[in-house]
Length: 145
Image (cartoon, rainbow, N blue to C red; front, side, top):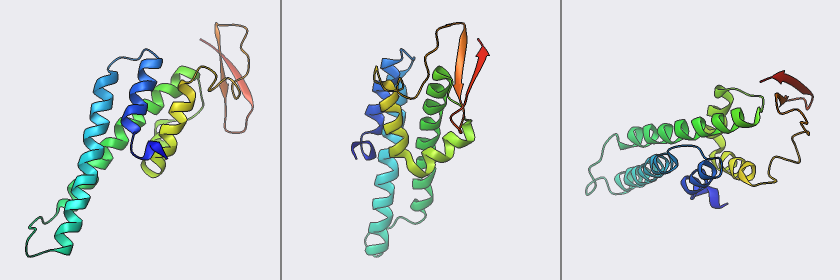
């Protein structure tokens, strides 16, 4: 529930936990885009409710452009975490997951950033030179690093 409103904070923590650069920049970009999206939707609702006093035509389109910016930044974060752990997937899946279910994506990132977050679903890998990839069907495939 908290990731509906605190996604930027979650992404900041994830980037810090994984020693990824620009944690503050990612969090600020997410916060600005999310807040602009919400504020512009509220402005559009006010315009529709009080058309004589609030003159803001076309602001709804601008709101969704900010939302797409938010989704893009979240997509980049999810793709980076997937690459770190060798989780099967692609950027298109990451984009649509963030577009449709951004709180779930943030919760997933938060779970992975915990010390034991991904351990239950990732198999043991005794050879650090090989990366274990888990595909959609749960089978494992080892690849050389």
